[in-house]
Length: 347
Image (cartoon, rainbow, N blue to C red; front, top):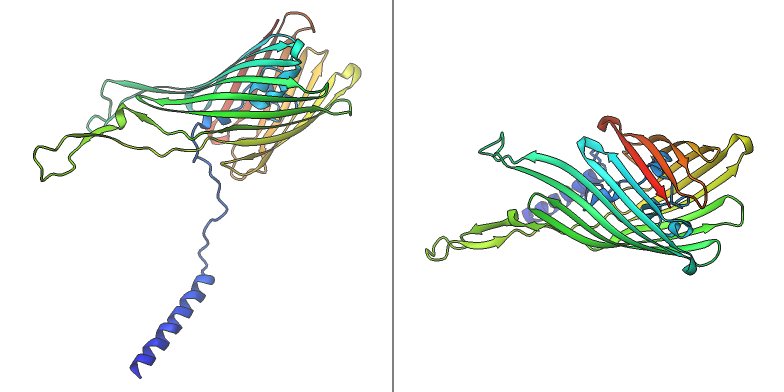
């Protein structure tokens, strides 16, 4: 009888626990993203002051050197040799730089490009538990990505582009590297001024760190006196690169004496965050002076950046040597703001 009573009590307790779990007022967050879980996050920082002044809505606008970052298919429409250099005063006293070169090959209806992206963290003191004010040594960190791009116009309206990348991250004596590819398409529709573009970027290998400060000496068996200094290496986890798929549409209208108006929108799907939308606009007067504005990460959960604006001067005429100067500002809320400066040369 006692055994039956115990079984009944266990059954009732189990049912009550199940019921309590189903009605538990404590809620657990299930809709989470992978923000901060990938390697080489510097690949997510946009290149080109013109593009960032338009809120990064550039997949279908990309027809200059910065297309090497946004959509490699866009450089197929570059008709002169172009060089662009960008400096970005990035967050918390870091510096981001972009250098790009595009060389058109008219006989092949194609273009070749080179790009270099670099993020520098500056120097810091080496601190230890025993010497929290510094050991007298300094360390620094730097990330960079080197890319080679090929794009070709398959028709007079459609182009395809491909970029191969080598990516490297370093902090003090530790470093890691990875390889990746970008693929993009660009279509100038039958509707005058309406363009569509799409690109997938940073699809590649995982990245993990190695170096001198991951080496140590251990004693695998304290009971053996002659076997107590064995060199070993700490293994670090390999992390994925921030793969991003973006698709965009833009429309440019000639407004006569009022200038040109360009409107663009990009939808993007990152591997490490929620989906979002970028929007941008550019007003140009006399094909020389430009004002831009945009909004990044619309509808993305927990984003802190958003509003962007900028402007530029384009001292260039088709078939001639010229220069482009652009500026962009973006708001990062509690992290202050970011400023970008670009200079482009056309030969």
